[in-house]
Image 1 (tube, rainbow, N blue to C red):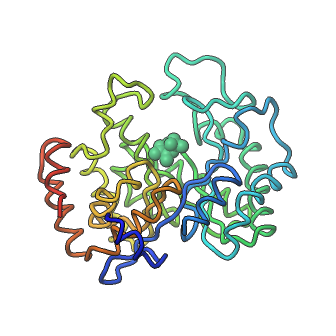
Image 2: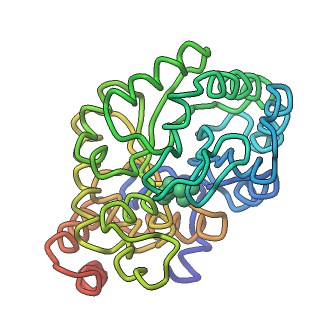
Length: 309
Ligand code: PEP
Ligand code: MG
């Protein structure tokens, strides 16, 4: 987007012909949340709650969690926020949750998998999130990280509803979940794609390893084809499907994602206005044409070139 376009964004995420694509912020602390609100984010698409506890040796109490989450959500009173339950393990180990050394931590007991053995930890977190929703006045949804199957999604949604939280969703970060997006949307209220992990697992390429970074390029046509399945599932079910991985912060890829049928984009604060302006300068039909052109390519450079205006 040009500087002129940035100046033009009116703060409501939409294409130039009015197709809504919500522009949200990714946050992990009160400072991040304030920055996202100041940047004009319409809400929070990803609150990484584990960031609050990277240095904690013991599980925080419900009251402590409630206060910590309220501090993050307060700038978004009356606005939609998606709180992600603890994504412990692999690149973000938590001392009180992460298992002893595993041979392949990224393929181990991480994310929602931790909760299958210790559901009481999840239930305490959900109780704290429900309390923070009341205290902050934010319109809270909850989602789980690292969901592989429809059965896991249904299990999580049931616990969220039992906690009195209105909307339950799951992240799509595992190729099997992308391939079952439609069925997963049958048991939850929304999905959100974590493109960082979805790329890592699709290309079998560690997201932390520079040597394989080329494979984790979000313009890889193989990843775009999985994203299309998720956009199609959103259209078929009429339920929201967002993107909250780094891919959403690329103003040109954001157009492709909108064209594929994704309904919200969530990113770090500095990208909010640029992505909002990029959408506002493009029609939905143009986004769809860019998506189709990118999908028809065979490598990331060609996909980038095809998605030029
Ligand atoms: C992702 O995997 O894309 C994501 C948004 O989650 P995180 O980066 O926290 O794993
Ligand atoms: Mg992830």
